[in-house]
Image 1 (cartoon, rainbow, N blue to C red):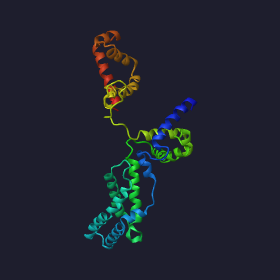
Image 2 (cartoon, rainbow, N blue to C red):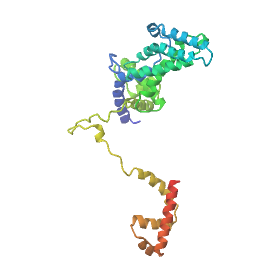
Image 3 (cartoon, helix red, strand yellow):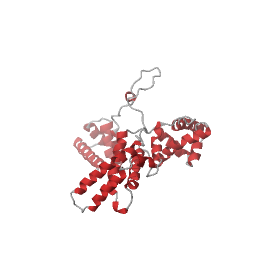
Image 4 (cartoon, helix red, strand yellow):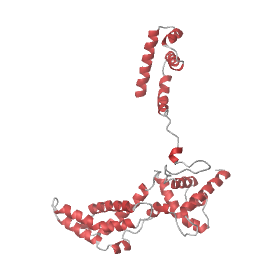
Length: 304
């Protein structure tokens, strides 16, 4: 990396790191760090969760113990399962609420937590003398964190780059606070023990995780402000011909020289069959048969 390139990259990094870290005085952090915050695991049996809904776990556990005591196929087993799920919903809602205000609608988080609760109810073994909350809380928290990791990025990036971007978001604030300014690319890479090119890619991925809306108005610059979608180029009507040309090229190269010459005279020279026959020294009917056989051969090769 040349000195000029490094300077440009460092300047871009300072801008990107500033958006990740927020104000240098620590007064606020970027709301877009939701994924990074969600990646920071909290203890499974967190006291505030169990204190808010102390009866949820034991209630579910009692219902599932009753269900386990019934023989397979008993008509009450399904009803006890449904009752257990309903009894655990307050716990699921409480866990989901801990991630509110982080860029994902709360109702979506409720749904993720509720589905994880169903999984916990179905997977819990009440005969192992383990509290239901010890099994359900990590299951629900894990589902919520996976939702942030896998569904809050509008652009799909490699998992390695995504993980590095999340680390950048969560650690940039502390590095900015310590330095009193936005860190450079080299400082970020050293802080994370990562390669500079990987950090640069992760920064770009983090900035592009929420693409601009196509309905967003473009900047003025003396020109009328238009929706972004109106400034984009259209689809090239000949784009599909690229694949056909690439497929046809080796088939043409495999033809005998006389057949290639006839095709060139007919379709590039725009000569009639009679004119081609006079040039080649054969009858027009022979040229017609050669053209038909050659086109059939090429069509078959492309379809294959």
